[in-house]
Length: 391
Image 1: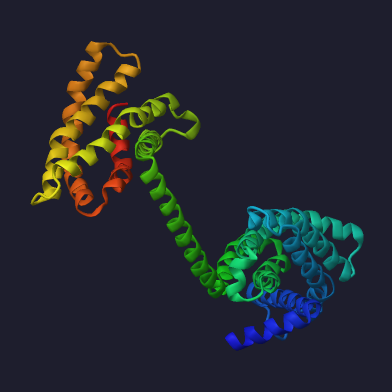
Image 2: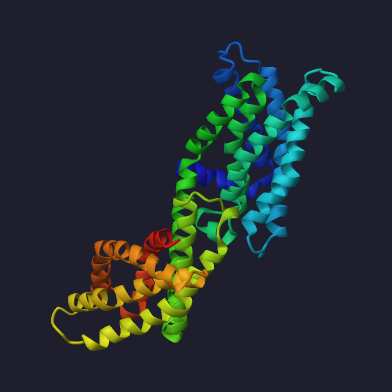
């Protein structure tokens, strides 16, 4: 397989126009053969070879040459652009997809002897279904092909891949075009599955490349965050704590209270986040550094730090939050007191069920300047619970 692809790649580099015409016409003809055998249940003896030839001829004479220049034009036009794959895909689906689909839908009945009126009628009958199938299959092809050239250099010339990959997807899309209108809805689902199965090897290779890129991006982001924490420890802790608390309130409202995004209580979210930005984040930043200093060079240091944290900081932070939320929402002191007596025991029971283990892990394994980040990641679910209890 590798040798065949290597030979094909050389052929494309040497004769790009001929290669694209041959591959496009062949895959279009193959798509029609699949349609007649798999969907119309014809045997090889009863296949309408004239119809197959008409399909293939369209690829040899029009679609292949058009796509060869189209993909090169897209790559040149969007060279160096931000979000290049997305822009290329959108341009392709706005211009090339409607053009190619319209031309083939008119060409096929006309080339088989139908009148222009019959061709127009057929065009209106199937155009919408063909459009839906095209968007589904070719957006996938567009995204997987229109990657930055430098990212695809490991797999060969990027433009050659742009031209080769859609033809494999097109085998199944062209089967859709060929089949009777009753089969189209069923065929749509089958084709998407078959296309993904056929392209699995290509997708797997690009998935590995994408994962490497994502890991590299994640590592770069982590390094930048680490530098930010080291240079601006108080600001970074306040931002991460407030953001995760606000996110917890959003999760509470959407998942637990079943609210839509338009129905969210943004004032409540802001109050919850503000507690993290103004109080909880700065407090925890100095608290963790103080614990590190007090218990430096002591035996069982992480265990002692965890006990101190859960004995002092946990009740203080939870009590402050439970009192703060009703106060800033306009409740009276008596109402706040009643709410505190109801909610504080529930919150503390839940706290001692989860946080001792989290903090023990935090103090054992996490560097001091990353402890607030680790605690905040764990606190997203915790903030969701507290937001629900104190709503």
